Image (cartoon, rainbow, N blue to C red; front, top):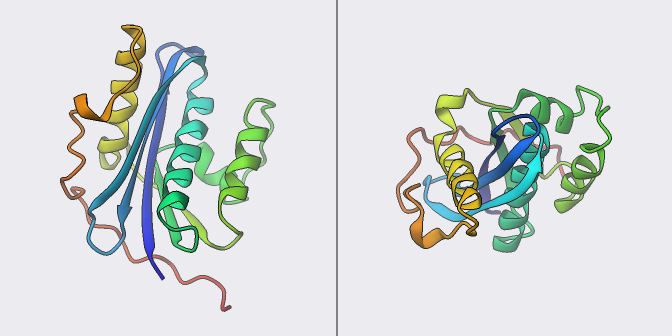
Length: 166
């Protein structure tokens, strides 16, 4: 079974403010970048942008292999804790995004890990590129990205935790 690492980030310049997200899907064994996504999403809160990044990363991983196991790494403690089921989702704008993220892969196929911001630089750079492009009235384009899509991640992925049998 294939294993992917999804690193996602979102941000807003102001809260709410002009917002965007970035997401990277990597091969868990090699660290090779397999897919990138980034988008300017207009005016939104930072947390909504984080969830939109998560969704983009999960969707990109699903397109690569819907049977894969996925380990999500984000610097948003809120999203990681909410998607892991440890924190309640109270904000009305985040409830549908979290519900949608939970349906991209079957339960038990996705795990979540909080990482420090300095270990999420690829996704962060994509989110900033998307916000910069949006401020110019342009869509983000992978052809103009400076996020080094072919470079292995700076830190190799930790082994994925074992899921429940079956």
